[in-house]
Picture 1: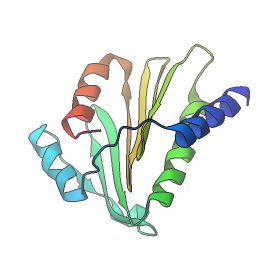
Picture 2: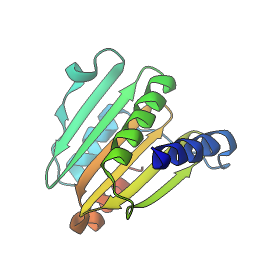
Picture 3: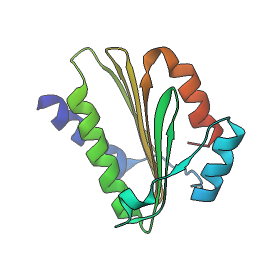
Picture 4: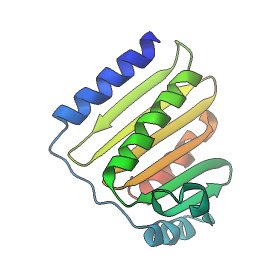
Length: 148
């Protein structure tokens, strides 16, 4: 519970203070195009998020990635905070955690017990990636290739 409180405080500070940097969100179509270029297939999963998503895609390869484009930023921020909490609950005290943010984006990285987690939002888009820590370089390369 203490780790969760620290996470919430850190994320709140990042949201309030932030940095001057901004990122450009991508659309669902751009996500599909960029994943194809990176050698992956994006599966449409909009039905699972139809209450708030305009687009939602899953990549299920040697890692799992979920991309959501929402109607508004508030839904995405809520999903982001919920997923950060969920990831945090999976971690041990030895976990390595990093938070980062800017004007219109935030990201949360965590590695622990052989797993790698990345949760981010940019404006009204959200990205969640989970995979084996051994695959960290490949996962980060994918994240970079789509601009997150």
